[in-house]
Image 1 (cartoon, rainbow, N blue to C red):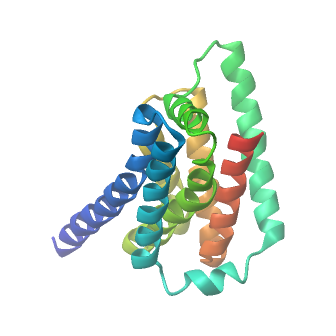
Image 2: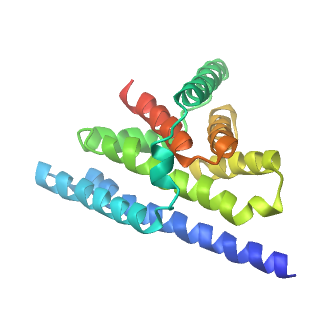
Length: 209
């Protein structure tokens, strides 16, 4: 019973962190929908950057800064290429089977277009750091003792897929792959800098190319 109670409490903590991370991004979406001037857009995006920075500051693990100085760039490159290969594969299958684009991806791209790509800094820099703190560092800190390494990686991939899309098809399966690869990269050395670097590269590729 104590284990169940501990798991429930930690699930609530993880969910709370996720809610805070989502709140931090609200101003940029408001700017995209409502702003009629560059000033309005700058305020919306600026507030998101500020809230995101505050979230990162107050949830910043002690291990994060040293990990950023000790990134395994070879592993990061391999992981990014694996993710890219699956994205290409799933993209081809989606075209063959006429599966529509994922709504989460549409939302992100619409936001970027409406804010003149100022929000790219959020999706390329802020979001990867916040999501890696929550879904890799905190997830394995809270639940690593209750599951083996590989079970944790699979569960983490499923969780990452679910929070990015409510659909289940070839397109959304790519989020499982991304989540699982990021989880493996993190668990390989328990180095958050590695998974943050992969996440940033993936988001930069998706947004800029």
